[in-house]
Length: 182
Image (tube, rainbow, N blue to C red; front, side, top):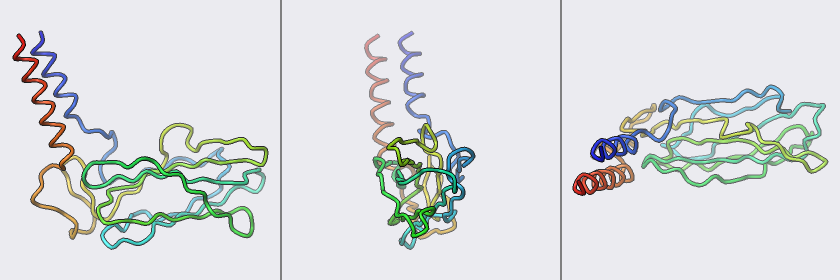
């Protein structure tokens, strides 16, 4: 019984961490959020660096006074950095907000969501749970697969990123110890 448990445990630890398909951008609906439109590029230019720019326009009849952009960057080694909150700059008309993210070589994708603050001090998250948007780079690595339109960042010598190798070694070691206890 312990042997079966150990094998199941190792199998679960080896499953991919993300449920979405590699290289597929994601976007949430803006219906009922107070956001009228959202504008951004559909690819991160990680091979050449630069900025990933985003702008949004709020609906005329909302009392949204501030917008924060919460981003989470994930890199080709399989690691996601902690989310960072950026205050979006309000344009002169008071209905448009903009900001940008400096893109570094090796970025796989960026997730994001928004925090909308109203005149009365209340806040709402868009979406309410998780990240609502994801944009992949022009050269990415995800669960053993390279993708994107660029090939310059691909590392053909590594079959798996270092973090995954370490996790696999620890998992196999734990399974061996559990089997050895029988």
